[in-house]
View 1 (cartoon, one colour):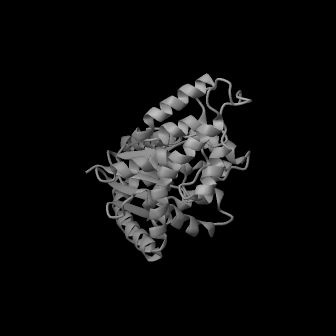
View 2: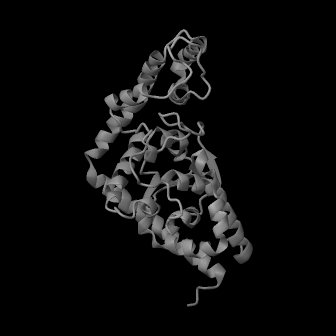
View 3: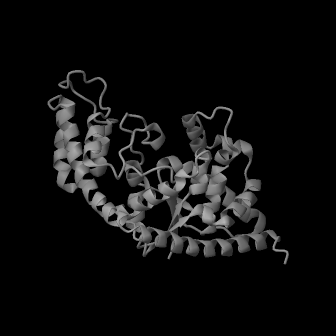
Length: 332
C-alpha cells in the first residue's frame, strides 16, 4: 500500500478552505493509502515563538476538526512533529542541498512573508520552512501529499531536495507527488484570493449556526451591483464559488437557476446568500455533532496522539539510519 503524508500547522481551528483543499481528499483516500497526518507544531512556532503555550490547545482543536470531518484514527496515524526529533536532524542535512536564493524564490514563502509583514526581519525558521517540510515528507517515505494549490511550490522544493540527495548518495528517498483538491482555492469571505486564518476571512468547520450566517451575509459578491437588480457576475463571485464547492447533487439544478437569475439581475444578493447559509448548514451540522461527541472524550484524543506519535517515530528512526548510512556518517 502506498503512503500519504499530510498535515497542518496548529495555529487555530481549521476552516472550509482546509476542507476543500486537503481534508476532503484525506478522508476519501485514507482507506486506499497508508495515511499519516502531522500536527506541525515546530513550524507553527515560526510565527508563534513568543507564545508557544498556545500550541497545546490548538493541537487538540485541530485533532477535533480531523475527527469531526471523518478522519478515522484506526486507519490514519495522527502525530506531533516536535515529538519526532529525527525530523530536525534530517532538516539539518537537507539544508546543505538547497541555496538561500532558492528558498527566497519559493512563491509560497514569498507570499506568506508579505502577508505576515516580516519585511527584513524574517525568522530563519520561517525561511527554512520548505526544508523542514521536506524532512516531514521524506522521513515517512510518502508517495502522495494532499495539499492546497498554494502548497504546490513547497512540494516541488521537496522533490528538488530528494533528487539532489539521491543523486549524491544513492536512491534512498522517495520523490512525492502533490494531490490538489477538486476546488483548487476557496476565496476568503472578504473576496481575497485565499481563505486565511491570519486575515480573519474564514468560516471555521466548528463555527456555530449564528456565526456562519453572520459571516455569509457579510460576504463580498459583485461590487458592481449597487441596487441588487443589475446583471451580476458569477465567475469570481465568492458566494457562487462556495455553492459550487458545497452544494451537492440535490442542489445542482437550484444552483444553475440561481446563477442564471443572478446574471440577468432577477435575484438579489441576499437571496443567494440565504441559500448558501442553508447549504453550509446542511454540510456543517453533522460535523458539529461529531465534534461534540469527541470533545466529551479528552482521554481518547491523548491516546490517539500518543499512539500515532510512537508509530511515526519508529519510521523516522529507520529513515534517519538509512540516510546516515547512505551519507557514510554512521560511524559506529
